[in-house]
Image (cartoon, rainbow, N blue to C red; front, side):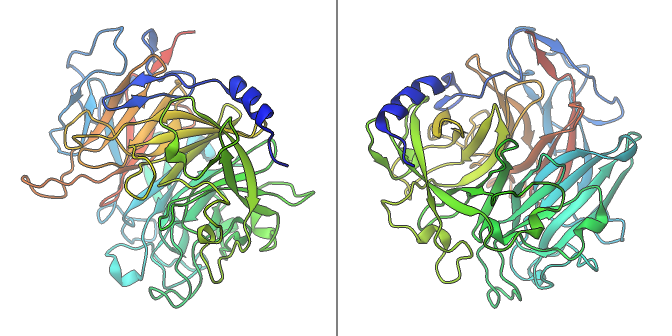
Length: 492
């Protein structure tokens, strides 16, 4: 059933506008709460034995947002504020799996789970596409855990003990371009293939572009991996679960034409739970794409059209004709007036009773240009509200200018933490609801030259279950980091 114009106007008023923030470039707004509000309490301290910023350096003023300036790292890896430190948990080509092979490369989406005996379990995607011979450190083809022996990607589980010991093993192999994904309310990880390769292309022996479920605790549950074909075959990026209604929302990072946001509705009587998704028939439930319109009832062809914080669109959902894309990619199965597209649909998370969705940037392939949007979809009101907008960054090589949000998380201390995947310098940065953005970390690992520097993106930003540690990856060559420090809590 379509939303009436009067309903949209009423629901738009209920949704409310985002809070406009003055970031280093353009305008930025965040979800409710603030990671570093102006009045804060100091949280947990750091491990003095870890490498990182000089703990003796003077901090910033008590009322400043964030944690002060980033201090250069003598090891040339990660600049952090005073009082913060980091630890390398895995490093492709240096650390090893339980089986003896090197840690695979190209770390991407990550989620943290509480493990047995006080451990933390991190499921880590490895975004490796194409044939295995292309990569020095593909995901090892561990017996019983392989989907397609020709494919390079997959997932590993990293177990971090309280005493600092780290173990890593393969949880899924033989998948392709495992980019982001999402954790489930029942304690598993959904890993997403960002590819449309079919059997016979790029050396693959099976079709790819699916979602797979990975259990971080029960290794036996990961044997004989099976794609969840009901969730469609396309260039998947991320996925979240509506814990109340059972819907799954999925993003697509693709162009020519721009990709889509999707909603999967479970079949009547289906109950979610550990391993239940893999029992679904390939055509189970309904996969749909959005059709948006403004308060005047005008169709919106692309989300980049929104240039003001607080823009609200009504959403109808249009069923996907052929979710397995047997002959035509899913996003090309619609006429231009059928659905609403967006460029670089990336990270997602569930919070505040709805879905936050990132559009990393838009350029010539979109009607309007920007360097990042975050939208909030309210399932009950069926509205999309623009919460974050980054204007085009005129100088991406300058430190302190943020662009290209990708993986993103809501902090246990309030507000947002964003992994940057833009041009030039790469950061982890936070945002407050009081009008400020601030840096948390800067990648100092130069993969280029002094005259032409190159810095890999951050990925997989997520907090530990106890909130003490922020985990994040440097995608190339593949480094998983644990960051600790005097995290601040917002005073109520």
